[in-house]
Image (cartoon, rainbow, N blue to C red; front, side, top):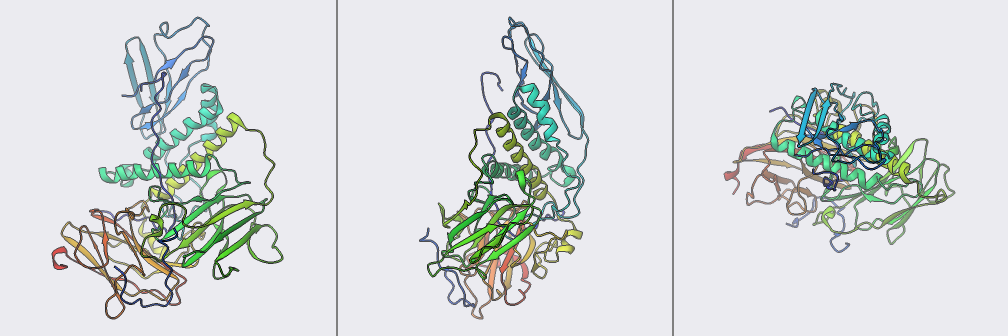
Length: 543
């Protein structure tokens, strides 16, 4: 099989798909000795369908969108009013055009007694790939080259929203249809056999990943107020994207470059805490570069672990500061831990942190239709951009540019620092080194990995699927940090990747998945991390 790879370094969120509307209008083990001095404090105590056309007295014709051919489409229709005495019974046939940008034209006729809806679609626009890995984006260190957004999905949401809004009677309805169309477009343009998506299990996982992207988009942008932001978890155990990390907590908040903010918090039990300001993510788009960064190495922190950070255009007279240069659009926080329990699996808000606007815009009246429509378009922007980053294979050229990515199954290359092939560092942790490879194992095989951790602030290894989502870290051991590893007598580690418990320490559980991604992180290493050594063995030889 062709190797898969989406590089990223990590932090991110995840979600589930929404339900289809049903209305009257439609039927539709502790280490004996740690070979390093700095270990984080334990944080466990911190915590099928048919389209029905309805007529109403004196109203325009209204058509409700429905799944067609595996995706949602948009309705292009006239809004000509019917006579006041019109009724459904007198309506014998309604016709709507189903806009479809797929790779083929199709016509679907649905007859139901005296009603019929004819749906037609045509398409064929293709998606150009970016210079870099659209499918490599990750917070915490894996970012992606979204610097040149030439090409990509040509959704035309703005014009689509206008047309559909006119047909539906509200701008928000049009924006919702455009969002559904974006989801369908991702499926038909990015998640296709031509791009290597044909295995039923991978297709199902791609749909789940897309649902997580949508979930995140709704959480971040449907109610977003950049002039009055709040921190949202970037990833959770049930909402993952962009290379999540079981040993880290990440937060996101949208901001504006013409405002001032204050972040207050406490480093708590984290072994490493950092903040980055990214640009280009206004209105839900993916970030296109980091323009300011601050870590606990350079921060003023009180004896009790508390801190304050000013975010502003001008530097304050004293204290911690992050500059809001032109284009600043979001702040991302990272809180790495090396506890016995994966910090990301702990319920509730483990990290005390908040952001306050110092000069917020005055509160205004509810924006109604146009406000809801705008936010739905922001959600669609997020889905489109992050889908491009996620549903992309890593080519040999891309892996060569990065340097620390191996496409040879069950082998690693030398770790390296995060520098994207396109030159930007969006979502990237500039303080970290990374390594990435693939595992491919038969049912009776296991991968034995040996090596030594470098002297650093934080290090771990985690298993992902091909869409930069970690495996189930709540119920399984799918990652190991330095404080979770049981060491050999000489201080080295021996980690085993296997489908079932081999009866030896340091087992990484594949969940029975025959292939996946292995991702390494090393934060602030004082020496160059060494390349992990690997050997495929029979599972029965390990007991």
